[in-house]
Image (cartoon, rainbow, N blue to C red):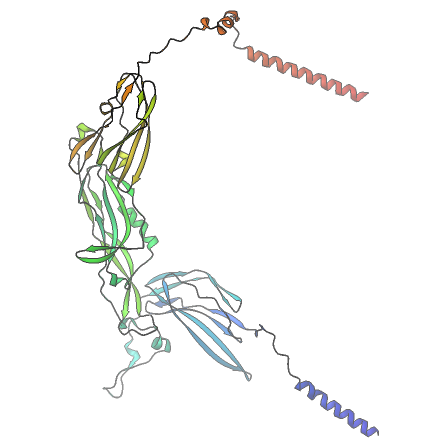
Length: 501
């Protein structure tokens, strides 16, 4: 009987471990991933202009979920991503390493600063401190890399790594398509008088078919030096509209061009010295086109091209009889005027506005003085200016009071001499209104004597005529100070006696 129970116990002992080994492991919960190692893979510090700069990350021992986009790098253009999977076997276990690489193509040679950035992979934030990448000239071809075939008629074979064989096509496979773009400084007239406005613009022209070949490069840094070169120390400058990336369509030599406005100003010469605009340079991105385009690939190779604008000189002519005439406004102006009422009475004030409207420098139009006239009182003027590009309106508002009846000859009292560059003559702008003032001459009544007043006459007669000292107020202040000090002393003594009791 004992042997039977011992056999049963031995059998149960053997079955227990088997049951534990056969028990299945609980399935992983939703959203759980196996622990993985993620690291950034930096790019090279130097590369040729025909090479490719890379940034990537390596994921070891895990499954790739979501990851952020790679950053945009100054001086480089994204050129697609590659994915590489490497399998390792360590102690009989299989591991898979996944590497995601972003390719960047340099625009040209130079040193480019890679700013610090961060990249999130599977919820892990990878941070880079940044670096400096030097892009050098294209590496010369290596004849030793070519081996002569046994059969001289057979094509040559090259020996190289896979990145060079299957990477971005070589520059020799691209062709430089000629463009018809140019940059120019354009003035709306070849010569002007002193004080006459001339509109000068810096424009970039290109054919509509050249839009795929050219692109602006670092425009915010290139524009300020160009504006500085357009400055003229001997001219009054009015800035025009700001630079626009939206072109307008113009015709040049019978052909349609797209014109980009880089700068535009109106200049009013202050002296007879000519306006000289030096040659200007603008660097653009120029693309070469792949000779045999491939679907789904970037068929352009970026480079640089500098466009030069020829210099420009605008002749300036002195005004005739300038020494005798003095400072006058220059422009094509006409007279504008307005008045506040239609009926005028002696002694009643009214407003009269006189001004000019047209093309010219409104800042040079000064308020004309009103000539003296018996019985006329003039106040003002108030100036109101309504500028528009190249001209506008300017009004001088006077307030007038007429003390005598009759016709007020405003055309004789106000005049403005201007020089018209269209006719090369001086014009005198005068008012066209001559208001008729009605009523009688207002004579000033004599002021009443104080003695004749019923109230003030009696009060003045009974007033004390004793001369008062100028120091009376200072004496009163001194007495008040002594009184306050006495009251303070009494209060201190009272407080002391109350304390002793």
